[in-house]
Amino acid sequence: MNNINQNEPKAVMVNVLKGGLGKSTITKNTARSLCEDDPVLVVDCDDNGHLTKHLGFKEQFNSGNKLYEYLDEDSPVVLDDLIYETGFGFDLLHSTKRMEHVEMAFEEEFNPNTV
Image (cartoon, rainbow, N blue to C red):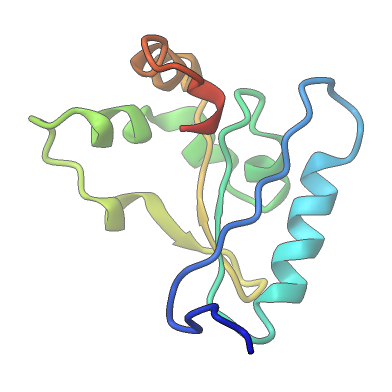
């Protein structure tokens, strides 16, 4: 018997530190496949923003630091401000050119890459 609660969100993480291995392509294709059955949110934390830009969100990549602002408890930014429909059947929480600020927010964590 399967003990997985079908209403619980699930997560898939694609992470390799070396560039050029196809992380963005794998992520986009996996998200596209998964969204046929369930809602999907892709969170792009790549400081180069290749997936964000490839999906057509270059302006959002260049214009803000909203993910970092959202992590600040005193910020007026809400999660809905960060999520965009992609037109591919899944939503995107985009990367920004200032992702190093997000990384710095977690540098005190035991394993910041898993946050």
